[in-house]
Length: 635
Image (cartoon, rainbow, N blue to C red):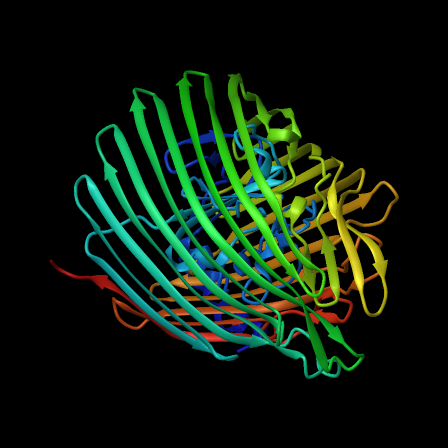
């Protein structure tokens, strides 16, 4: 079934004589952790569980591509992309592999401590209850990883004697198994979940250019977590452990990478009347292995091993938050710290051995407040942040919100920064015959942003439009040093100044029988001062999603489109624009058993993701179907 057929199947429901279901209002608060939120003059996208299910994808990143402005470093899906290219860009700020967006999982940072990217295989989409995407650094609550915004993932809450299991199979040798259990008592809750996935993947070099050295790119992984909660009258505490092991084929015989990691975290919450205290702590360890090669010959017939890498890293961190709530005024203040130690241990062939890395300390303290004056609410805040040898920085923010009936106007200005990661400082990276050198002389990058927006929230219609401007100083990007048909050599450098300007708009319309249409568009003009475009940033990105949900059935069809972008800062390698169609279906066969089917790139549109210097292609048509059982078991 294609998208046109889907529309004609569900559109007659509009004619049924039932009242439209109400739509959720515009989100006005940033959820810092599970129990503490701060109102902010920001553009916030909220995906409840139904929205997560309506967007197909093995991992959360493939689903979030329906949010305009959300991109990874490259267009590749996380099921085939090297994890070191899975950093997030929002609003056209770009990425060098390291993320310019902070990801929080139940209030705990989830960015890789060594490189800033995100292991999307850690998160099971079916067990995520809600996702919040905040574009822009309009609050001073978060640290340097949130220079472009933040994404918060919230796990599904435990239920009494809940047991679930699922199997999905698809093309390209794809199989996924998931299982979990939870139980809830008056004060205690326990939950656990695990996911196993494998796919043979696909060739990332297109037909006619492949040689004997090329193989399919794919991933096998196992991920799981265990969580224990205590809920008292005024106290709440959780302790969570999660682990991941994955092995990836990177598209040639010799190029592979693997990761094993484990994280333990805890969070304590206490109510003091109208005030709240939250304490969090976390520790994680991981080890990343990778091998790199050079492709020889114009026909890609052979390859030569050039390097093996071993990257051990560990992180410890903590944060404290205190929220004051008073009539007409609120305040949130606190502090946080992280300690990261990591090394890139490299064996190069035939040149020798290197061990580069070190310890990176970061500490910060912040205050954020809002005061109401008639119909206007004013916001102000600031963060003092020390980034070890990189120095200390002050990041202020301010803004306003004014509301009248269904309308809400907002504006904000802010200054933020990002310190280079240990990966950017010390680790070399290679993709095909394109090599990127490290640079231990990198300086922090800075952003000064402003935005002005208008929100409308009606009973069945919701709309938002935001104009934004972000100037970047000392932007860290990959600078081309050499470009030949056989080798592209780049180095991470502070590339000077850049400017991003744009408009983003969203409209959601709800009709009868829970038929919903969502439209979203982002225009982002991101350029260096020499007028060249920032690499990996499309000027236009749009999304349309038609979703019908009634009783036992959910059907959704979506269109994602991206305009042309460049693969390098010299704007030499042009990646044409493209559009893909997605389809997701779910039907409850019984009260406990559901049938699931999903299609990504339904029309099998070919699009390019990178030049290495041979053009790489993105995800082809991928489909999966299966069954999910979810019910209650008795003691």
